[in-house]
Length: 146
Image (cartoon, rainbow, N blue to C red):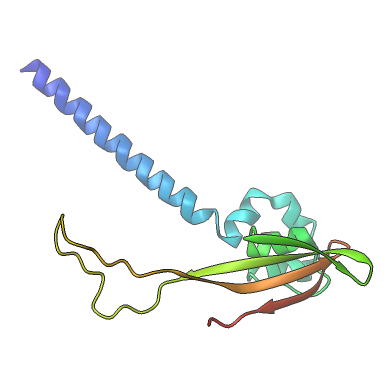
């Protein structure tokens, strides 16, 4: 009987540990992509910005003349970095992608373990981009979904 009781405690401890791990993982993965999380992890970078840029970054916005650090705090890590040349000076464009699932008409379908399942495709398109020259924003744009 003592074995059953210690087994129950071990099982309960394992369930608590698993629940904790899942919760911690969800918080980590959901928090990494937010402006607030990036600011909280890099307060020195945020404090080095002007009050105007701090206000914009806090709202997830950018402006011409902003530094690359400020854009990273505001928008996060880009999906693509494209080096280029702008009037003889080095430049770089950051592209942020969006993954969207089209509206589903009656799906997803699942008929059983040996039948087919319908999983709608994801469409990838650029959602916004920003171009830097000399480490400062010279141009940015929001793209409309296709």
